[in-house]
Amino acid sequence: MVTSDLLGASGLLVAVIGVLYSVWYDEITRGTSVRVARHRLDRATDIAAVRRVILSRAAPLTAAGICLVAVLAPPAIDLITKAFTTGFGHPYDAIKACFVLVWVFGIGLTLSTVASTFALVVKYRSLIGPDLA
Image 1 (cartoon, rainbow, N blue to C red):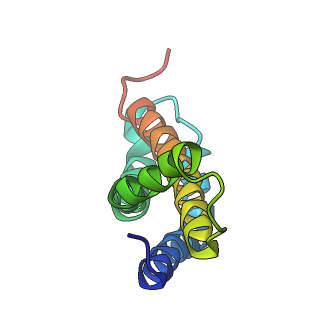
Image 2 (image 1 turned 180 degrees about the horizontal axis):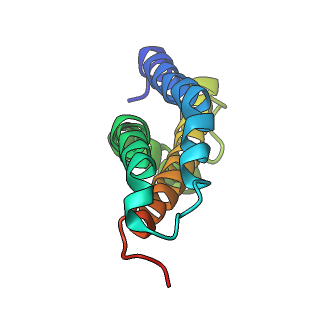
């Protein structure tokens, strides 16, 4: 059962993740745009910086987003299923519709954080690799 309390809590959590992502976005994108120096010894500060961004910014946001979307999935999927099977002809419920919308926004935000984290991990792996020829 979706209540206004659940809608408020889920909306607030998606907003918090979104605000943190927007605040840390510049740092995350800076980490993905680090130039890979030719020699591994010259990359020490970049390796540390990208590792710190992964562990303290990108990975926690991704984990929070995945957990939030997973926790909200059962009621959201139940609502969507009922809307297409038994929901036709029933009165419109704005709380249920907004809850599904918040869940969809959470999915979009989570996909964005997953993509950023993946890009950072790829950059990190290239930084810790051997010297370039």
